[in-house]
Amino acid sequence: MTTTVRRALLLLLLTPLLYVLAGAPQAAFAHTELVSSSPKDGADLAKAPGHLTLTFDEAVDLADVRVLTVGGDRLPVSRAPGGGTDAVRVALPAREHGELAVMWSVVDAEDGHASSGRIALTIGAPAAKTGGEAAASAPAPSPSLRKALVAARWAGYLALALFVGGLAFVVLLWPRGAAEPRSRALLVLAWTVGLLATVASIGLQGAYGTLGGLRDALRPTTYADLLATEPGVVLAARALVWVLAAVVLGALLQGGARTSRSPGWRVGALAVTFGLLRTTGMTGHSSEGPEPTWGAVADFVHLLGASLWIGGLAVLALAVLPRRRASELAVVVPGYSRLAAVSVTGIVGAGLVLAWQVVGSYDALLHTSYGQLLLLKTGVLGAVLLAAFASRQWVRTRLDLAVLLRGDAATVRPFGYSVAAETGLVLVVLAVTSLLVTADPGR
Image 1 (cartoon, rainbow, N blue to C red):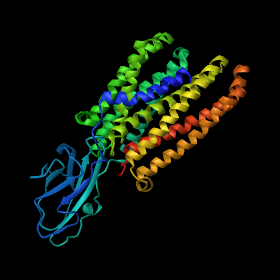
Image 2 (image 1 turned 30 degrees about the horizontal axis):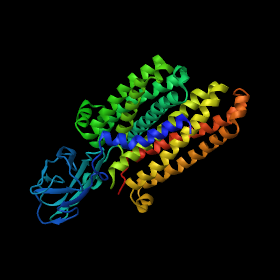
Image 3 (image 1 turned 90 degrees about the vertical axis):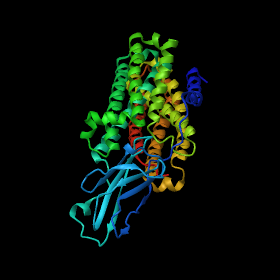
Image 4 (image 1 turned 60 degrees about the horizontal axis):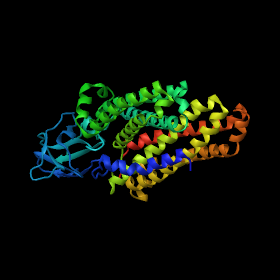
C-alpha cells in the first residue's frame, strides 16, 4: 500500500473522531410540516371563528410562520394558549358567509426549506367564489428562484470538489503542479466560484424561505433576515472559511512545492478542508433521520470522497494529461488511480448510509420525488464508474507503453476520452445532488 493511499485511508478513518471533536448534531427530521389545524381544512361552520390554530410536527419560531389572506394581507400570528412551541394561533378577518381561505408557510429552522399550504373554511351558506379566491393556491417560491438556488448549489458543490480535490492532488501526487499555470488557474477559479456561490446562496436561500422572487434575493434585508437564522449562520461560516482558504491558496501559489511540504501549511489546509466540508454538509439532509450523528459523519465522508475523486480528475484532465510528460504519467496516473479507488469506496459506503438515513424505506425510495432523484443519481453514478473502470484498465494495460513512447498522443488519447466522459457525467451527478438538497425527503 502506497503512502498516498495510506494517507487517504487515515483521513477517512479519522473523520468520525474529527466530527466528534467538532460537536455532534441534534436530532432532526424532514422539513417542518403542518400536522393539524383547528378548525380543520374544509370545515363547514355556522359562524366565522375569530382565530385559527396551526399545529406543526416540530417546534417553530413565530418569525418563521407566515399566514396570508387571498388578497395578500399578512395575518397576526401568536402562540396558542396552552399549546407548545409547535402550535401557533392566527387571528382571522371577519367574514359573515362564504369561503374564508388563508395561505400558510413555515421555514424549517434547520435547513431553511419552506413548506406551505392552503386552508379553506365555509362560513354559513356557500357563496359564489370570486375569481381571485377560485384561482388562489398555496404559496410557493417562484420557479426562477428555485432554479437559481439549484444553480448556486451546483456551483458551490463543483467549487468545493475542485478546490479540496485539487489541493489534495497537488500536495499528495503532483507537487510540481503548484507551479503549473493550468492547475493554478483551476484552483483560483474554484476558490472564486466557491466564495461567490456561497454569498449568492445567502440571498437566494433567504428569498426561498420567504417564498419570494429573484428580486428579493438582491435586497439587503433578505440577507440580514437570513443571517439571523441557523441556516444563515451556517452559510456565513462557510463564506468565512472560503476567505480563510484564500490564505492557504495564496501561500501555496507563492511558495510552490516547498510550501506544500510544510507541516504548518498542511495543518491550515486540513482545517480549511474540514470547515468547507462540514459547513456544506450542514445545509443538507444528512442529520434527518433516526441517527443524525452517523448521517452527518457519512455525509462528511461522502463529500470528502467526492472531492478527492472529482477534483483530482479535473486536475488530471486539464493540467497533467495535456503536458504528456512520461515521467509525470508514470508517477501521477497510478497514484491517482489508487486514490480514486479509495475515494469511490468511501462514496459508495457513505452513500448507502445516507440513503438509509434520509429515505428510510423502499417505498419512499420508489414513490417520492426525493427517492426518484436519488435513483437517478445512482444510475448516472453507475455510468461514471463504468468510465472510471475503462480509465483504470488503460492504466493497467497501456500506461507502460505510453511511458515508453514518451507520452505519445495517439497512445494517451483513449485515456483522455474516458477521463473526459467521466468528468462530464460527474457534472450531471452534481446537478442531481443540487436538486436533492432542495427536495423534501418525505420520510
